[in-house]
Length: 250
Image 1 (cartoon, rainbow, N blue to C red):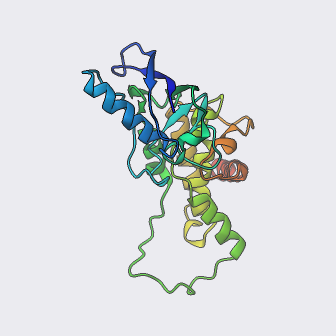
Image 2 (image 1 turned 60 degrees about the vertical axis):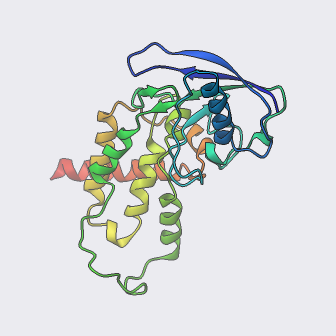
Image 3 (image 1 turned 180 degrees about the vertical axis):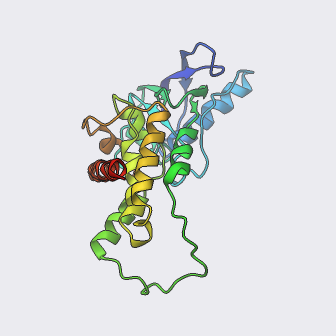
């Protein structure tokens, strides 16, 4: 495959960026999108140029670091996959592909296609945990959990924190991420004691980071590589409203 790439290049956080045209030649259809970028970078280096900087780690759809917007869609045209799981057979020979970083005020560009998503880490640090002592591994049947709650918690826990929800939302809202991280704890007995504190702290940290709020566009649900339902946002809103009332009364 021969492709024309329009790639965002930016030397640093304070530098002015621009789109750069790069030709990608002889790309195998079975290559992943990141492998295609590897091939392009090898040729750029051979020609004495500066390779394109992009984030990656596991390349198995687990870590969530491969944060690229491809033709205007976070993670590209395929459904339920991360960028590293996207293959070039989804494109046609001769296509022009636009590649940009995830765009959000709270995700500043570090260089080229790499963004700083440490805001997510600070949201998790604010309340995405339980503080009880666990000791040794408990008996799996020692604490009864309703299957429906267990299933919903597991579904929410599949969130990998990639930030696609933020990149897709016109408000740059991370509510799908925050809702998922809160729900997978709040639905289980172990997470109930700190539920109110958790949702208040995480939502307030979200606001402090400069993210927008949810206005029900559902773009987040559409691009989530783990296909997490926007139901977690509704649950978060209910829990936050209840926790706010309790806080006010107290």
